[in-house]
Structure formats: structure tokens, C-alpha cells
Length: 129
Image (cartoon, rainbow, N blue to C red; front, side, top):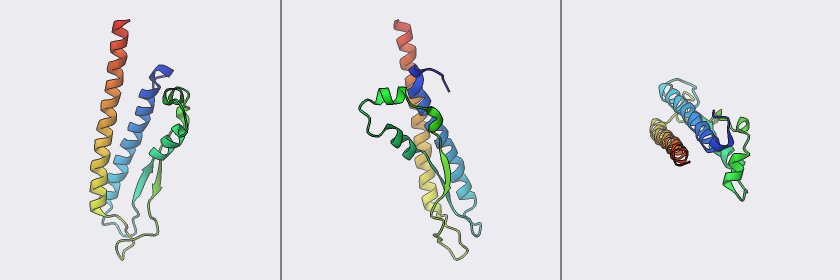
């Protein structure tokens, strides 16, 4: 994490990328346990936390600059614990997991691209100064 308000957008993107990486691991674990009796799918909560931190603000720049990044972490939870698709109690649907994994990988690559663009903008700003 870069410790400067000038880099807060990068820091927020970094937190989002970390959450996406964690989600990738969780989704891969769900897929690996698709045939494990009694296994319940897990997922990661992050986007809601980020949305709550920026909700109702007039200036996104000020909000991000003043954001306490220690409050912005992802959590893992068991999804639909009472739901089972099969008689053995497992609630992993391979089609859902595959779609979520592909969606998450696109999100991760988009976040990496956004961070690269932020650093490119900062680099350009430093060159012209």
C-alpha cells in the first residue's frame, strides 16, 4: 500500500484487486468441492463495503482521500447455507461457479489495468512538472 493521499485511488484499486484475488481462490475452492457431500459454497463480500464507504458523498475525490483503508477489507461468507441442490447437502452449481470465476477474472484484469493507468497518469504528471 502506498502511504500518501495522492495514491488513494491506487490504494482503493489495490484493495479491490486483493478482494478479487481472494474471490478467485474461494471460487476455485467451490469448484474443487463440487462433489464433496455437505459442502456449502462460499463467496467474498467487498463491493458492498466499498459502496457503503462512498455512498452519499458530494465529492468522490474527497471521500477517497479521507478514506480509512483499514476499514476496507473483504470477508468470506457461506452463501445460501440452507440451500442444497442435491440430496447430499452440497449447494455448488458448476455453471454458476464457472460464470462467477470468468466474471471475477475480468474484474481482476480490469482493476490491474486501472492501476496501471493511474501510475501512467502520475508518471506523466511528474514528467511535465
